[in-house]
Image (tube, rainbow, N blue to C red):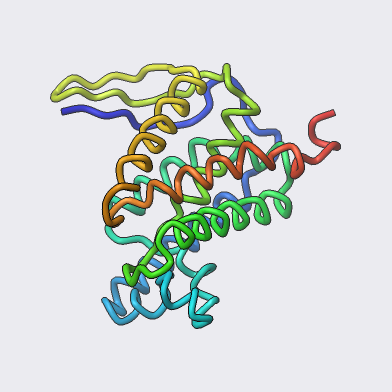
Length: 216
């Protein structure tokens, strides 16, 4: 059993403080605390349920759901990936553009998931779709950057450096294969379709959100 945890870009440092990235992380943590206090009732109220949204109800959950998480592992994993790739993309855009881009990626991911199974009554929650958009933007912008990562296989642990095109590309391939696999069965669990949609959104729109004053 093994895995890989990205820690950040070892090839460059942002020129500006990643204010929005940090703010998004703090909001996610705050909402998760509210989930722990509110329990299932809170989750059902603020998570996105496709059938409910298609019926024209609780549209606000398309926004609130992307700041919610199903477990400690879920939020920790998502926030690690956001911190690994978010600062460089925010630095290339600017705080406001990055925030709009992030929310747009989350919305695109949810819409794809709803289109995939509009009658589903399973709550959709998590920042994964928006973070997938950030990863798509990173792959297109800095494919050769080396990502400092923790590699662990059973008791073997070491710090390694992996090109973004390999690390993110392999991650996307897994999402794509799993999205194809769940298309033949009733979807549930990990929203692979949302991950793929968010990633594609990120790659397709990153150039539109770049701040010319920051990439000159």
